[in-house]
Structures are given as structure tokens and as C-alpha cells.
Amino acid sequence: MQRQVLPEATLVLHWFHTAMRFEHALQAARGLGAGTFSDYLQGHPIRELESTNWRLRHGRSSACLGRLARLMHWFDAAHVRDVKGASIVQRHINDLIEIYTPISLRS
Image 1 (cartoon, rainbow, N blue to C red):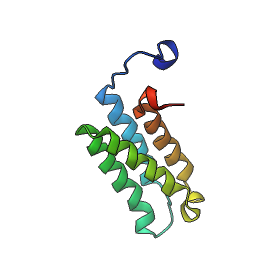
Image 2 (cartoon, rainbow, N blue to C red):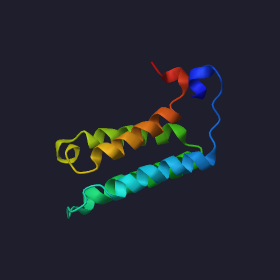
Image 3 (cartoon, helix red, strand yellow):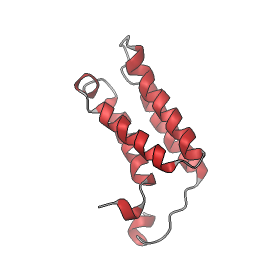
Image 4 (tube, rainbow, N blue to C red):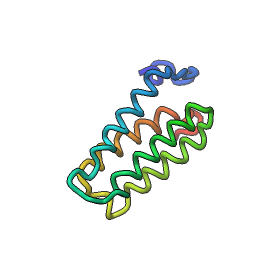
């Protein structure tokens, strides 16, 4: 909403809200592929999100965005796209990307 009212304003992230958005993405990723036995399918997005969160908290926002973009690309693969819960995780990752993309880089 802030971006709609004041699009040129400097956005300040509140760490609580940042942590909650990552937690929502992690919860969705933990439910990914329920009923499958693929450790890679269930573990990869969780490891990537945890690593991405660490990078963001340690001031590596460009690395954070790169990892989120790669994870979104991973979800486009045919063996992942149709897995139960994949669209929910993608939505949460896309929300994170939108939040952390500088306004100057948006089209």
C-alpha cells in the first residue's frame, strides 16, 4: 500500500514482517510434495529459503534476490511444477521478490 501512495518514498523493512514472510514461505515449502518420498524435492526449497534469509539478514540483498530468482526458476521445471503445494510456495517466493526488489529496478 505504501508504494501505491508514495511510490518514490524509501521503503524501510521491518525485520519482524520480513521474518514472518520468510516463515510463511518456509511453512509452505515444508508441505511441498506431501506424500512423496523425494528428499531433494522436499529439502531443496527449504535449504534455499533458509540460506536466502540468512543472506538478507547479513546485508547481502543482491545475493538474496538472486537466490529467490533461481528458486522460482527451479519451480518452473516440469518435475516440480505439478507437485502438490508448488504454486503456493511460488506465490510466497514471488511476494518476497517483490518486497526486496528496489523500485528503480521494477518495470
